[in-house]
Length: 453
Image 1 (cartoon, one colour):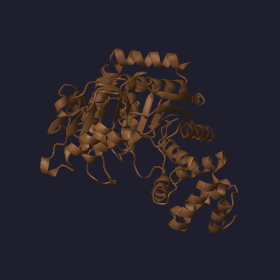
Image 2 (tube, helix red, strand yellow):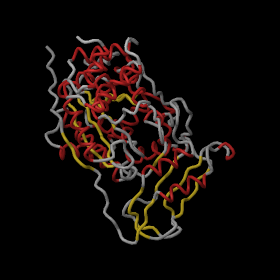
Image 3 (tube, one colour):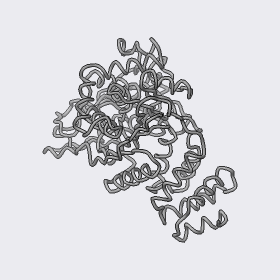
Image 4 (tube, one colour):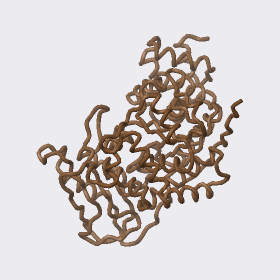
């Protein structure tokens, strides 16, 4: 095999690596034999020359082997997991985990904190008083076996090579590679131990994938890598041309998830959860088609089974203190005040620019700039209008939730955030087209459980 420098040159020249060469590159970087500037050079070569599907699968496997993996083989039933590439107002996990558990699936979900406009799933969960976001491996597996669901923070020893290389990609201009994105996403899901994986790939202005072509390519590569590595991976491409649901911000999103589990949530959030859950049920071999899966999940939502599973999750990871938010929503972090965001004109809402709404929330402290930055869980934006709605001049477009800190400590002037929100609404005299929630749904192979002897 060529030297590590020779492997960099090989990819620079557009040649294909072997599995052992990919292993050597990843191992060399983790052992510091391959320096960061050398790995950056290889990553740039990958961006310009690309990776084959085999190379991408080998890289994914090398990421997984760089750390530990959760062993869920003793959990009875099919274990499923869901991952979203991120979006504005995406609180899907909080609804989907108990919903899928109510339908009989075992749901193993490891999530992270947000680095950007608002918090990640773990930040949202920390809005719930007493909720434990960190479970030991033993606790995680035990909870899966007892109540069919576990939701915990992701540890750094799962696919650590991905984390180290991602940090380098972030500062070397090599983020956009579809192959590198796929290896990053799939490796963490495989290391988390699930047999059936559903990827919600967001596309649009408020998503990492800006075009449908990019999103479809990523979806295709992820499914192919999963097939090569023995996992059932299905992909759903969903729109992020406007925020998902009405709530943007950690505490607000928890409340909206609870409303949805009560059967009173926004239509788009409910529809996405039903679709993702149906795809998981199909991949697990529990239903023969998506329509049957959606009906099963709809029934679980409307008859209260999903809410009961959410209660079980709260009790398991937060006890009576966490359960109390269902009876006393004001126990969630509350803002110091709420400002109405008035419309400057009358007309139809033809666009709600997700990035602008998210930026306003971040300006007020809902998101973080650095990994360890504190965030204000009470901050957020609650939309009153979405695409297709009519608004009168002076009517509220949204509500801006000002943080619980004293006014003098607020990260920015609320009037600045209010203006950003106003500018995020495109108001026209004629009603435009409402963008479809889904672009495409591609099902992976149906998981065939091994029969224990």
